[in-house]
Length: 256
Image (cartoon, rainbow, N blue to C red; front, side, top):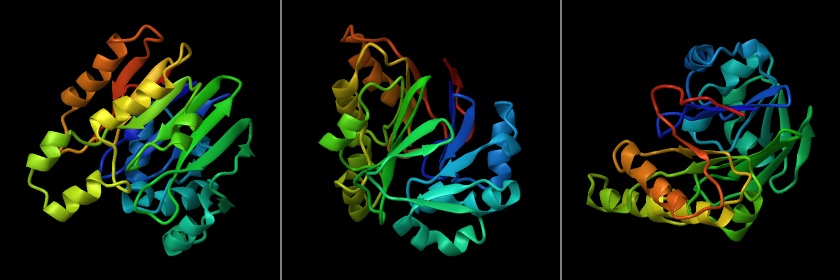
């Protein structure tokens, strides 16, 4: 199993997951050229990808989908409402629609797209499961519902949003309406929110934790990492490798 955040932040997001011989991207929010460049950094050829999975329609998650999928004939898996929102951008890319809340098979993987709260038409998180284990992905959500916590239990690897430090957000330069949007149930998880969600899903089999979608203005990687580390050192259940995502370069690759 290999997991790498190719990009993470408000300018573009993409996650590479390889499990049981299948290679997929969750979102493609950079240009296709930049995604190809970042894949090369981790020694992956785009032609070796097996599919794309889209969480929601915001441009920082779909910018490169159409070009990437058409050029390399990658099937794009997306919910019907989200596909309806971005249909023109996908062009004639091969599309497979799914329904949020219903799991489905893809090659040797079990994909479970579960509903999350965000200001998009049909946003989802994902779990990806194979005989090598389970990867849970929850970013771009304003609150961690009971369903989200239940879906993320028993994961070998977690990718969790840690978008902002609450004091930095409220004391920062954003206009009030944008601050309220970020703090709302349909916005983004703070560092403390992320840690609270993590506390609910810790278990002995958790081996990797990625902190994702950090704000460049309202957060600091060291601060986000410290909040997560404080939680981890206070418990004895597990000691996952902690990796913080970056907007401008691929993260470390977690290989299990």
